[in-house]
Image (cartoon, rainbow, N blue to C red):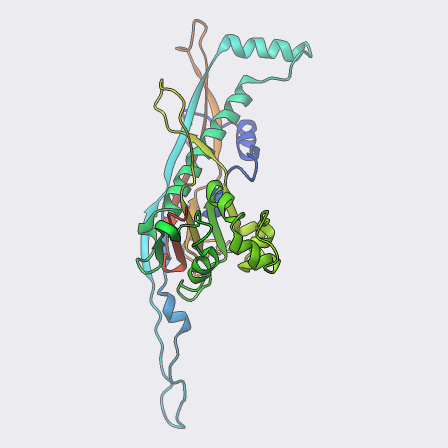
Length: 322
């Protein structure tokens, strides 16, 4: 076996896999759950949703032939994409950190810190990709989306009807009722204070205060863990410019049927979308003589993934809710 020019370090890989940001900060991996694939290029099936719920005449005459049914799938091919970053670390930093650890003055390891920093950036990138896909109108059937305007927007407490709009969306998907709702924090902050929702939950006795996530999830009959509120921020400024923080999850509400039991891209489990994952994240380091005066190491973290939408009819998108 040929030696890889950038060796994988199991200890650094373990840090990258174990490193997790707060669950409330990012929701991308829940919105598009991972499914393992066996190679860089893989195949997946799209099943006609209606055929699983068809009906026919199954009666067989005493001497007649048994009716035959045929089932078809549309096999498609895709491939994972490689994502990764390097971080250069001068040898003097590595040596000084080791000396401090030996003297029991610090536990800081610049290689481990680099892995955590890169992993955090990869998480940011994955969150942005997931948000872009989930909020993209082209990933939903034209008949299964609505754009709100004027007084219909949920930010208009007097005239809008968020319960009616959202409830209609839950009834609009094909066959499977959505089991996951995704929105950004600004949208949720308006919804939780909407008088009509407060009245619907608290019995019309009051329209003040706010509702909880649990109450909202119960109202629409989904599990709390599938009510995903995106909290993440991203710096949209170019390098060298002043920081410009924007919310990753924008002005949209998506209702989707997502089956987390899906284990393979080619199985028959229907779901709106998933993330194909080839293996786990990897990490390692390699000597680089061109870093500083004494050389150093380049630390790398990477992953091979591909986000896919495979059943548009299982989703409903509410655009510009506020």
